[in-house]
Length: 52
Image (cartoon, rainbow, N blue to C red; front, side, top):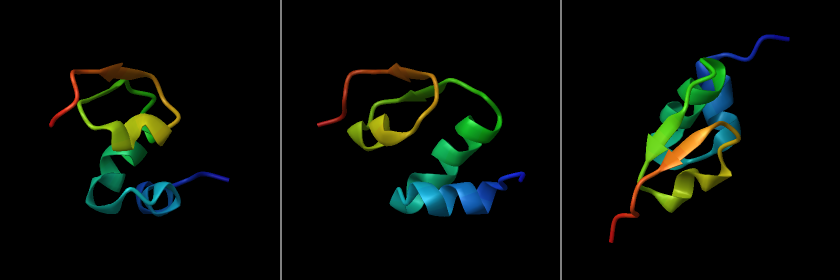
């Protein structure tokens, strides 16, 4: 079954940034971020120094 952006973002439950993680998963992209909240997303990631 194909997962769509809104279904995936709801599944991730990352508040307002959920669509960013969902887009990375569905498009098989590397997620570049500086927010520890995204560590739960199951995709390739490039972690920048975390914001304070």
